[in-house]
Image (cartoon, rainbow, N blue to C red; front, side, top):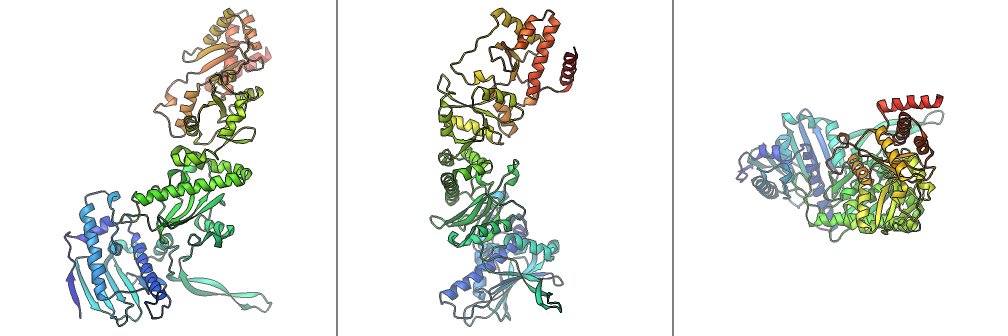
Length: 630
């Protein structure tokens, strides 16, 4: 006997609204329906284990099938099934009341505000692709009668008795014309691979051909034949569901290759496993990073009970750890109706904090157990650590003890170790510890060479984040000051008790200054005549540290609004009073000879900094040839 009825709702035309607004991506219908089938299968398994279901459990594989002629997609399970009364309760009442509440509350808001989590609502994603949906189901309860529910996309439904021998549910979608792409096998396979790769119940989709051994030929060589096998799309027991004690390094590496087949082996990994005060499992891998590490984001996959949700994990995972790869699985992360955007609530914040702590503890453990190995990995680890220090206060507190600075000599120091290392000869009068550094060893070589001749150490800080990292360390560590090695002459960068005397008197200094100002002919540059070592460069061109730093920060995507391409550089020009070229300029009789020598010395300084270009470079080369042959 057929029973007809009307779903009691207050919103008219609910199905077009569901189709348009419920999910941003229509392919999600398959994830929702397969997930529901998996839930039903797990429930019957659970009832059987508790002795509450006495029948034969049998094969509980969920099957997805397509009939292109009838234009249907069917999702079949052998789960707990439903009675006619349960259909009315769970499909007509609870699910639709959830849909109505959602629509009433959020229909006037943007998609990012579509937040709901009512049981059963996922079923109605079927109407995004189907013009009619059938449910044929037989409850696991003894003596139950099979029931059929049909709805063609309006608020009317029909329930009748049905013929069905096996326990479980078939959801049959009669695909609408605008959704016929989903009748293609490759499209469904693609969606199942994306969302169902690690579902806890086997998912079958068609068959596949495999080559198997079939006896031997007359020469004793193995023969093969092609056989058809069920195409099971998922691994029901992924390694993050197992205990770390069951796993070897090879298991973690094999799983990594499954997730990222074209990536190099990771540096190391962290197995997450916590069940209080929230449930969370997963594996996070530290990949080998390239300089363009920004492109490496969105590599962590978020699952809920082994159902893929999203690779956008910005609320769950701290920003600096979004460069990691791997899997996080938690049923305790609240999701919006499309499961694609996360709500920031207490559990999300706790999970975020837990992941930060686990990563910090793992890095600290590696540093303490095997410092040499840790130093070898620092090129890759350093980006994570510096990023974390800058962006997360709690991470900074732990990371300050295992953050390394690398000097050009190849040695590594923690920040506190480096302070002690330089105290002996690099202590300024105001007790500042000056950390000399370079961000371009080749271009700044002459300045580095000059500093090393004086016995000063120079750090290599050429990561994309280092301009920000430098500022962070100066703010957090007492009496630490970073100065780029080419920001000034080394005797000014690091003041010591050693004083150099100039061989020039005040009148000669003033004369030299005027000659250089005339030769340079740029009011934006400041000329100073200073006492330096005789083997120093005759002229050193520098950009003040604060301008250097702002320029570096802008290059890495930060800093102020200034555009350095549109403003003068305001160079400092230090003329070495004790150099033989300076003496030669003083002794030259003709003014034009003095200016020519000064210009040559200044251009040499620009050349050493990579600043001599265009016509100036051409003229410098001609002048050098003339000087060489004269």
